[in-house]
Image 1: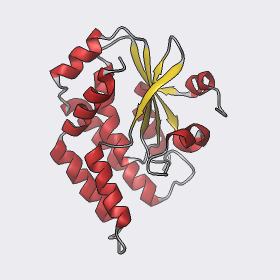
Image 2: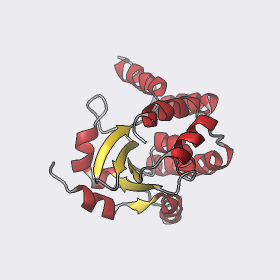
Image 3: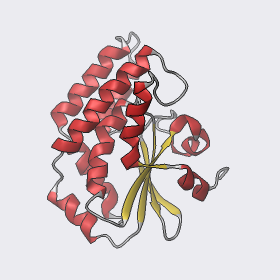
Image 4: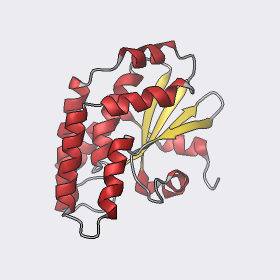
Length: 201
């Protein structure tokens, strides 16, 4: 392992500071990473609205709430992400809402492009797709598992898009993905979280 996990954790910011950081950056016409083009700023601005909406509207499954409240472990959900990432905007607010049910669970974020050494160990289909959530036992300081970058049904849509010989514009595909998320209403995410966490927490 070319990196020190404790050092990565100490470099991470609390998720509670994630949205305020993004809004401050946008006020300066910036996003995370080095590309502050209108393309990336556009997606970042849309993500702010999505995150705020999901924080208010997400209704957690009772089984997930029970799972969190009954956990005896001191866990950190360490997320590799970027402010412009649409999948992060769709999935992180519901995950954070779940963590608020358990005081021994916390969530922190790292910018992917600043931590490619860590990201290298958690590729998806060979790519550095985000968000990637690492579940860390803070008492033993070891990684129990990982989830991401998106629910499997959405991931399959990405695979299908990449497999097309003649791809429609990415902006069109991004809209299609957001429509999928809107229709799904976090149900696929919550099902996967329940299956993923049941054996770990």
